[in-house]
Image (cartoon, rainbow, N blue to C red):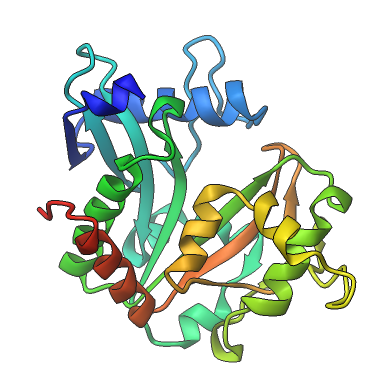
Length: 259
């Protein structure tokens, strides 16, 4: 991709309303315009995907300095510590999953959310730069447990029975950290039996980000949540401390500059 070859990557935490707005514009392009999501605070006129958690969270930005000024934010992670969640009233995904196992673990928690990349930068090194910034954030704050919802596009559960079943059969978190989906649209991922499941096809159906998480050892909570407003089926991704270290090793093996 021409854009990626000439990219000049930089990362930082958003420090101004303008930078948060740039993150929200990218989120609108991806989650609303591309994937059909919506929400009560989405500003369609200004093309901003925003919600009540934005003012409490940190926004990790990936920029391409080779792009025109004002259009340089090409990747985002929104992250929330426990202190931020208390200020906001809760973690974002607490309406989808019972998070008591996380609280009872005694681990220092960080929630990941609203992760997205500009379409021109998918499948290349951009995600590793964003992960590098995330790894620095985690290391600085001595986080023990990362978690957050990751999404399948669309709400047709039957069409996603293969990948959901594979997650249930092979990637469930250990019992002590196995949060469970809650609410009226929560559902079991135990849909297809092991003998009926086409594992190769199931893997192919998984979004690239979920596959990348699984490759470095992430696990998932029990059950999925259908988010009709956002046009997704959500799962809870969990990174324990050892997995976080594996993620950091993966970043370093790719030669990403830390700091």
